[in-house]
Image (cartoon, rainbow, N blue to C red; front, top):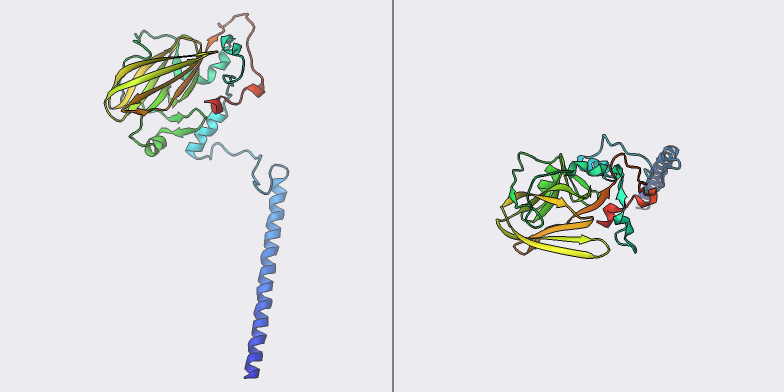
Amino acid sequence: MESYLEIIGVKMNYCKIFICLVAFVCLSFQACAQDSASSTMGSSGDWISPNMGQVSSRANSDPGLAGMLQWLDQPVSNFPWYTTGGSFYSQAYNNTTFSHYTEYYVPFDASVIDGIISNPAKFNITQKTPSNVYYGAGIGLPYSQYASTVPSKTNDLWIQGATNWTQYVVSPVGTWLQLVAYAPIEGPAGFYEMIQTDATSSEYKTYQFNQGYNTMKFKADKVGRHMLYFVENSQPSNVVVVDVFAEIPAGSTKPVHTMSLSEQWAVAQSV
């Protein structure tokens, strides 16, 4: 019996030695992997995020991420609406301020507006489906992904562009924008507009909405921040924001208002 136990003890010792050798080999491989990572990481990352500071490939990005990156790659103006002093909105801006948003407005339109917007008309989404939708914070999604994830029983409001929809636009005063609203049911809806300068003013009017998608025109006729939304069946939609400024005429010798780089990154966060 004692010899049997001795044999068992010897085998257990060998097992312990084997386990230690396996652990040593694993640690050696881990050390080699870390050395390899550090040689490629250099000063562009850290151990929490080894890829920090490295540029990702736009071409290989997920479609939803690619839309967001495309938006973030564009220059974004920052207007200090929520700081003291409001003289910035009374200044005229050059066309580079509006260049990122030109697909969302037109300079002229013969439409007649009764109140805030033109009367809503039925909109056939299958005939003019947007490629992407952009939220105020700069997040972009392919429309197909947006349509498959957003509940169909919510009131939604968008600014329609030539190929995309957005919830934020900077436009010259006097231009026209096309809005698209989704209403789950047909019926009357209250449409609201709040305009902010150094003070705020608001307007309200009732419109008849069709079930599904509706289209209507909005004229950016006053300088200021225009915040638009509607309420149907006691359910509010999201808010769309249009920052409206005077534009310096092309070829004008008037001094151009420009913003520093530190002023150019936050409109999306302020919406």
